[in-house]
Image 1 (cartoon, helix red, strand yellow):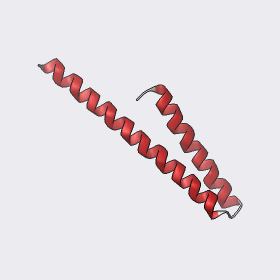
Image 2 (cartoon, helix red, strand yellow):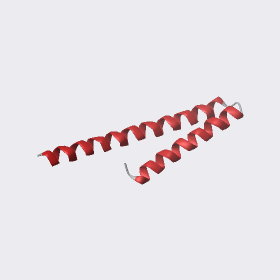
Image 3 (cartoon, one colour):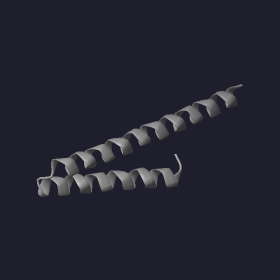
Length: 66
């Protein structure tokens, strides 16, 4: 996973946590849900990037064995 991707995903996660906290503090369920959605999107992007990394590592290891 590239550093830029990691930073972008982490940024989206932090923004989501902030939105969720503000939503809770102001009793705004819509903002709270937006924050949770942002956090979920960031987590899914991380999963996708980690899967790509794993596939890349597997490909490299099988090429070395050949």
